Image 1 (cartoon, rainbow, N blue to C red):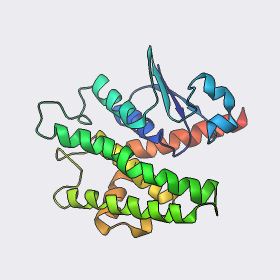
Image 2 (cartoon, helix red, strand yellow):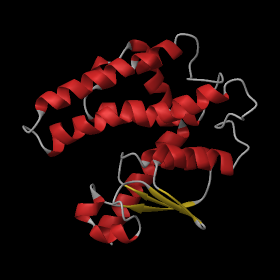
Image 3 (cartoon, helix red, strand yellow):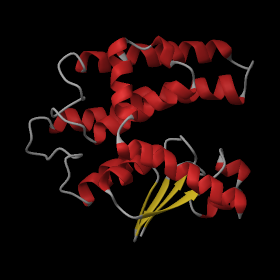
Image 4 (tube, helix red, strand yellow):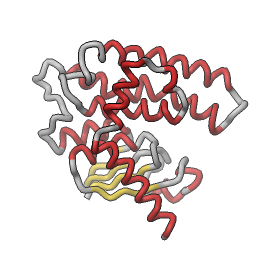
Length: 211
C-alpha cells in the first residue's frame, strides 16, 4: 500500500491528485501545516519535516514533482506519462519540473511573507508575486495551440503546473492571470480525479478531528 503524508492543498496535493488519476489504492496521513512545528513526531517519518513524504514498499520520496513522475512511470503504462521515444518527452519533463522549480518556488515566498510572517518583508512578497506571474506567461504561450501543456493530452505535467495554479488561487494571485490560463485552470479543477483528491483530504481531516 502506498502511503502519502499530506497537508491540505500543500505540494503533496500533486501526488494525491496523481494517485486519484491512476486509480491506485493509498493510505493518506493528513497533517497540520507546518507539520515539523505542529506535529513534530512527523520528523520520525521525514527528518526534513517537509511535505510531501511518500512510501511505496522500500521506496521513500519527498519531492512532489518527482513523486508524480515516479507514480505515472512505475505504475504505467498511462497516458499521464510521455515515453522517452515520444517527441514530446523533453517538453513533458520540462513542464513537470517547471511547475515546481519555476512556478511554486516564488509562491512559497509570497506565502511566507504574506500569511506566516506578515509585515516582515512585504516588498519581497510583492516581488516574488510578480516573478510568478511573469513566469506564468510561458504557460499562456503553450495554451495558444492546445488545451494542455504537451503531447496533445492531459499528462502529469498538467498536474505539476496545475498545483501552482491551485496555490495561486489560495494566495489570491489568480485575479491577475490571463483568460487562457484561467480557462485552463477551470479544465483542471473540473477533472474527476482533482475533485476526488479534494474530497479525500476533507474526508481524512474530518476523520482526524473526530478521532
